[in-house]
Image (cartoon, rainbow, N blue to C red; front, side, top):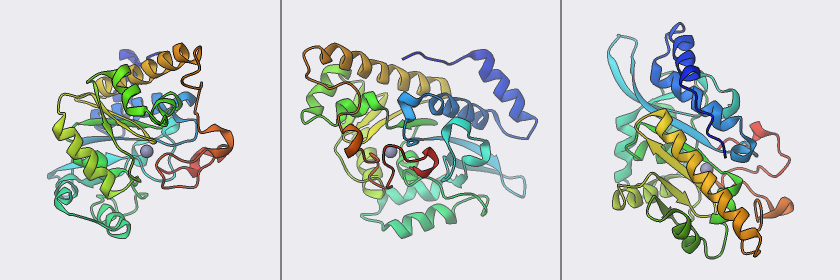
Length: 267
Ligand code: ZN
């Protein structure tokens, strides 16, 4: 899988959005979100989401630490800054101490912490992004990754392909419990470049938009190379082994199926 990052294009995004009062963090978040979203091998069914932690100004001009996460109804491929609604970060991060949280309370907490009350609902995977400490986080349900993490012996295969670079998170439906589990696993493996979520997808992270994107492409590329090498002895079927008829959205949180219009998958 080709890495499409361009320093010149990145600088163009920063200049373009600066004129609209958008900071460089968010401009670069838009840039690499679009790089992911433009690649059907990463987001064939419209799933996946991205985030950035940054500082914005509130109405008084005071600085506010926020997390901007892809919002419902936006496609990564043509996302704009308003498709990445900003929420107060600290109150969301505090919620990691809870033992449980209903979906309704989670959605309410996310909406309550929006800086702009007219924003779309942030992704159901918002807390996973908030509980991880990294500035930039990229998440996809890439086909080549699903071909590994959907296998019965996924853990052994993932260890073989990635060694210690990515940590493995057992399957839990997207939401508070998955966010908490992913944070715990990251804390036990703080050197990793990302997380492989069994039967779900890939999270990568970094200090910069480029670092997180580079790690995402490297991880998917490794999965594609492994799958194409192994296909010859038919251990791993090419593409998504779920098959066209049995496809389900890997987040477990929406009814997207193969052929569902991309905007219908809001994870
Ligand atoms: Zn997901």
